[in-house]
Image (cartoon, rainbow, N blue to C red; front, top):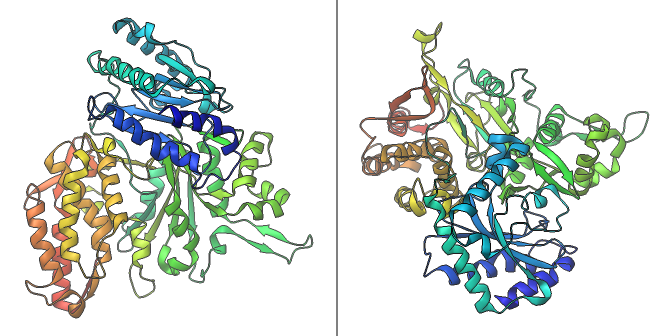
Length: 585
């Protein structure tokens, strides 16, 4: 441990001026240091989890490694946890008992969060004997960004190890285990800030790209606008972009260079690109030294691609489909590859800045960030495509379906003629995801280690084995993200998450004739899937389950029939009667 901390601290100032990707110092923070810490704590605290970050796509101002007790907190955004915090100038590292402030800021605001953090610090120090004598209450990280400085005020107690005087490994180990003993007492203080699985009127969705499929006139476009209005009554977080049949490449969305004007080459900006930048302006708290601090309460921006499949999606939406797979959240920092490269912005600096409404003094720092990094997909942007499947539209490849959260609108939000004048149900507000992948600690309250969901997906994949519809790692990540997003608290709720996962990610992939899917009897792929799901969905297959996206009008739980059972029956009958079937109505 001593040699490792010495190498990280003494190499840090040089490393941050070098390429971040695959840098050995970043790898040591991400991999080697967590391995050593786990070895230190595995015997005495086997349930504790370790997370670390050197940055997400770019160097962090303050790299860190945190140790979480699932009984106290399952995220670095809230609760109390020990953490190694490396000073930005490489002069040393703190071992700190600290607090996550993201959740505090959401609840109390920035000023209120500081006051609340100080209150919690005082309660902990006064309640745990000898903790105040273990270290000091104030830390100085030499931070140069707001995010880096935000690690300082919530410190409860810390020890500092100067880079040129790191103590022996046995002392480092002893200090860590002593702090963990103090930490273990916190769960009994009534300060548990761990999120609960209670039903909420606002839920995050696993993916920021939604396909709303269904017959014409069911209200798909209206649904998208209503979602935006749930967060902002003036609708400024909503943009409708009608798709034209002649769109065949990304410039129809991302703009292009025109040389026909009197002033020479000019970049033509689209509504899509202007709205993209508007979402960025909403989510950015500030930009300091090239690092973004994100607002904790940023509203989602909803972009509706109306009649999305009038043109071939794989062609005009190709750039977005590729870039969306690069989205990463790491310790509250967000990274995504650029949709519009920095070189384009540099070449057309003045005109683009004005066209994108970034020419005001308040936007200079954000524009400089774009000039350095390009314009990527903002974390709070949700793209919703409305689709009808008929002779005038294009189908979807599995590449598109794999990257989308597909909702059969008639199944998830059915029209009820009897409720035309007075609605009987209400739709929950959907917000943007803040996770790109999950760790075991994220699943602790819902499906420990993800073991049940993994076993479920393995069983489904056995049925799909050696077919074009077989599932890969992306599907497992999507399923585990869904479990964390919908926070099931019972067996039937967990099976409801699995049911909706089949409807959004698996069944939309399946299509073909009797030759491709097997005959319409017991040996067909759909029949085998039906049989396996009857075993997996023991609580809901022949009964009802909770609706995860809607409630009754009085906010009470709404129950619906098992969705995948109904859909598989429908697809099987269609195969039998027509000789061909697909998910799409």
